[in-house]
Length: 191
Image (tube, rainbow, N blue to C red; front, side):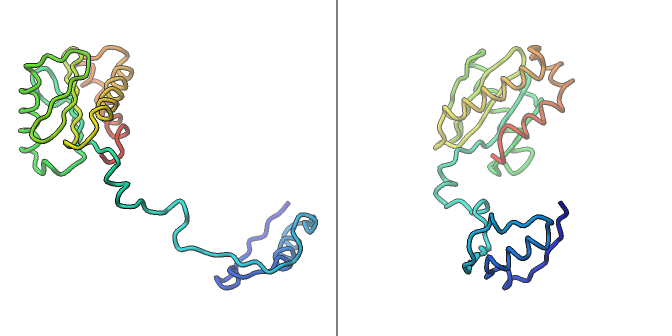
């Protein structure tokens, strides 16, 4: 079967009878399709400027969608291993480093272990856990659901655990930093 490209102008495409469509199909293919086509009645095709899959969300949906402000992976001294910021709450590098240092200092006293802990810090909810010499943090706004943030944290730490083949430590993390950064990019879509 050989298909022939057909070009039509917008007005021709909007209103077309099925007889014309049947004639186009018959000339484009060697076998007749008239038995498959419905009887000849005028048909109007509505062309929308916005296809259904491209509709924008209402503003309320954007407000109710959970958001993550940052994901941090720090070592046992509070230094960066891998970080990703999704919000502009910390516009400069010095502000980001100061936030990381203060969050690390506040959570270091808690000694979380492998279970996720939650702390309210500077109007932010921080969910964190420690695995050997790596400290995992997920930050959200004060209105965010802690369980969703904890799920993001659990997903990230489990992914790192699998990527590093159950050898979660700073040295192995730095050797596989490209995989961890890819994981950070993929785990949260734009915050």
